[in-house]
Length: 155
Ligand code: CUA
View 1 (cartoon, rainbow, N blue to C red):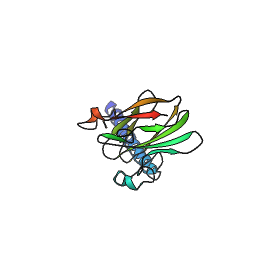
View 2 (view 1 turned 120 degrees about the horizontal axis):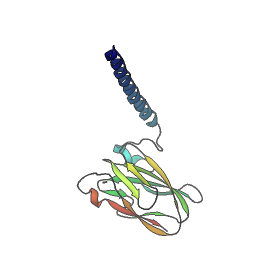
View 3 (view 1 turned 60 degrees about the vertical axis):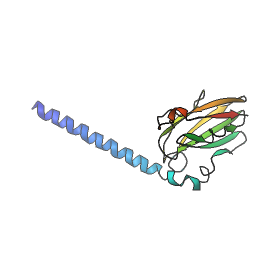
View 4 (view 1 turned 30 degrees about the vertical axis):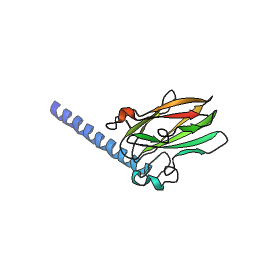
């Protein structure tokens, strides 16, 4: 008799687990339609209107979008040239990866996210006085992970 109750409980757990997995898959399917804060094709980033030319785009009086592509083992922009944003601005970062999972952290700010191929992470930061921040990859991404870094200048 108790065995039957345990069996029923186990079945319920399994059904609940399957339902959760299905729900997650449906959620991802919906996100695929959306290019902003959603999904992007990592194989054709060059053709994307913004990721094809990553960098800083003005969207309002003191508002900017910064598109960043992470790849083994650099940020574009950020590594070979710093990301530049104006002082006293609101900046929304749109971050994706061209290959494997990377991290994107603007050290000392609230910007700290994963850069996942196929997905666009968005995070908004308020910048103040002119200064410089470091960029770090904080997800292990391969042999030169430890050297994957960059800088951001508030000018
Ligand atoms: Cu890129 Cu670690």
